[in-house]
View 1: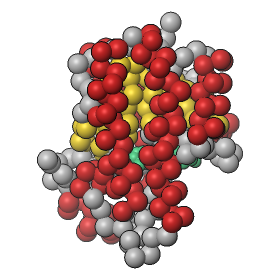
View 2: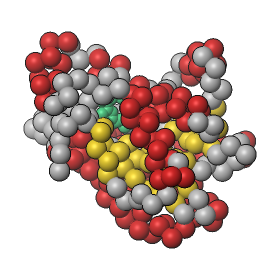
View 3: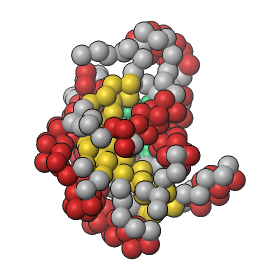
Length: 246
Ligand code: NDP
């Protein structure tokens, strides 16, 4: 039976590439979308036209109960989750001077609380079955900090603390936990930045002088999800074209 891979936020720029890659490798791919997202049937149909048969469930990853309900439905309708990719995330950028509690809370809840909310209902099953992969999509800005992103940098750095601690707890049970920290990837979100800003401010920070491709991050996710990556756990893997080395 195909392993089940759940990718949160799979209808977004990076998530879609991850869904496609895992499906191409034979996983049964499930994704989530925000309860308010009305484009899910359209996206599923578009993917089906391209030959991908994905399952999608509504889930507010920032809400504990919504996450538990979502995993319960997936488990009942399809089976237990073998690979969890915590990919859903948001930004609410502003300087700390302007940062209010609402924008702090939204980013912490969606990027960090979500990792607890989604991992909690799948982790015990993975350890009981003796196999599992938890892959947390963080950011270069969680590693180096970024102007206007105290909320996002804190959440993304917090993700890796979670990764390291949980990796220790489940290491003997066949479950690995890792973080991926992408730099600037050419998703719709980044491509919406004016070309002039990309050319003068962003690309010059990247030694490879280009944006990353979603498929490049997806390839790394696929490797971490594989049996070959069984000895790799608790790592934070940078994929940023040389923008930040540590
Ligand atoms: P997108 O904005 O394209 O996608 C984000 C996804 O997250 C959407 O599918 C969205 O679903 C989902 N999402 C947001 N809030 C919630 C919520 N409360 N509950 C459920 N789903 C939610 O972003 P990217 O694909 O670019 O980013 C994916 C991940 O990669 C994020 O964690 C981001 O921080 C990280 N990242 C991205 C980089 C980049 O350059 N693009 C660089 C470094 C890290 P919906 O539309 O249904 O709300």
